[in-house]
Length: 195
Image (cartoon, rainbow, N blue to C red; front, side, top):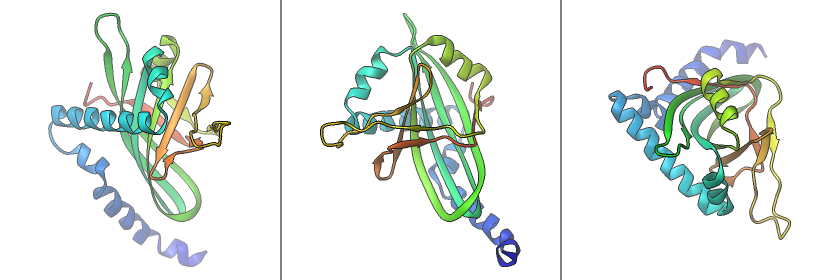
């Protein structure tokens, strides 16, 4: 234990190096317009990946009041984990959709070493829930993991779990669609620089 605590400064340097080389760090560079364009491009690729993994998600998002797409890079360093990311929330309108840019961050304690890169898509059935998410942000400080159901016909396709009444989340990892959306210790808030 003493060795891990003595090595803490090295872990912090490793964290900075890993996050500095991540797509997240590159999204922060450039003008506000370039950052918004990068986030929209990421949104489009995440949605395309989701539709490929779960074709039913396309119809679900089309019928929803709105959706949010977040990208996150996390780093686990022996005793602690850190993550940060950006996203966009889209509220569907009669004439034009409303877009809000947001940030996310998380920190926690736990054993492990490595980097976790995932994308999350939130689907809001109700406008009120979406607006609460945008205006007040969400803070998943406690246990907030949504267990997904697998398709009963062989389990080849998985669907996301509900994290709140009327809100569903799909989490995509390097290995595909996650069977459990891990949102523990994650906070979401408006990006003041991009809105």
